[in-house]
Image 1 (cartoon, rainbow, N blue to C red):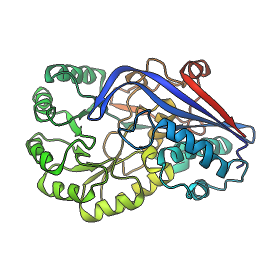
Image 2: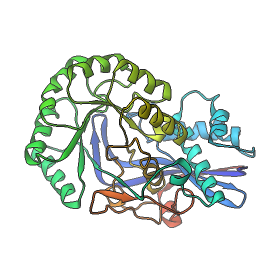
Image 3: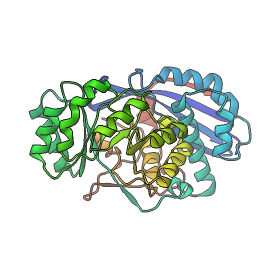
Image 4: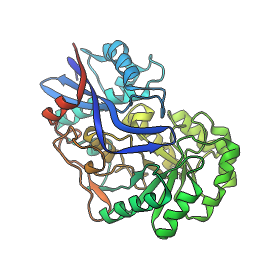
Length: 368
C-alpha cells in the first residue's frame, strides 16, 4: 500500500458537559484527524492527544509537529507492507505514542477498505457488540454525583467509573455505593496520589469495586506493587503502561491485577493487541479505556474491545455522551443491554460528516 497524501486536521470540539478529573476540567477537546489517500481510497485515523499535557506529555501541538516533521515523511510515498512495517519505519522516533497510533489507525482503515474487510475481522475480534460503561467526572458534591449516576443508570449504563482525587474520594464513592449497592462500580485517580496518601483509600476495599485505576504516578511501577499488596481490590494500571515492556514488567512484579489498554496511549492497535495477548497468557484481564474520542477513534475502540481478553466493560459510551456535534455520520447508540454495536463496514466502518469537520477544524495542512 502506497500512501500518496496525508491531510492533518486540528480539531476543537465542544463537550456536552464539562469533564473534571484530578488534573483539571475540560470544556472543549482538541485532537488531530488524519486523512490519507492511497490507491484511490481515503482512510482516516485519530490522534487522541489533547491540548493540555495533563494525562500525557503529548499534546495536540506536539503531535502535529511530530507527525508533520518526522513520522509522515518516513512513510509517505513508500510501499507499506503491514502494520509491523509501518511501526518499524516510525521506530526511530522515540516516544510520541499517540502520534504514531493516529497514523497507524489510518493504515488499518485503508487496509480494510482495500480488502473489503472490517477492522474487527482484520484483528480477530468476535461478536457484533461489546459491553460498555460510562466515566463520570468529579462533581460539585456527592449529592450531585449520585444524581448524575442515576441519570446514566436510567440511560442503561450497567457499569460506572468515578473519577477521584484527594478530598473527593471515600465520601463520594460511598454515597454512590449506598445508592446503588449492586452497580458495577470502579474508580480512577489519574495518578493523583502518593504512596502515603493512597493508603487512605483502604476503605474502598469494603465497597465491592471492580478496580482502583492508576492511583500513583505514571512512572512508578514499584510503589504500585507495594500498594497492590495492601489492597484486596484490584489495582488497574493505565498511564503506566505505554509499551509491551511496561506491561510485562508490571505483571511480573505484581504492580496490578488489571490492565487498561488504550491503543492511543501504547502507540497503536498493533501494540494494543500485543499487550492484550501478553495479559491473556498470564491470566490477567484487560479492558478498553477511552480518551473522549470522536466517532473515528470510538469505532476503532469498539473493534479492539471485541478481542477475548477484554472482560470488563470499556469506556466507549454512546455518541450523545460526548459531543454537541461529532464528525462522523454514524451515531453510536447504547443498546438496552449496556452494549454498543461494532461497525461492520470495511475499514473502521465510519464515514466523515464533512460539514461538521469543517466547523470543528482550527488548522489544516496537506502533505504530499
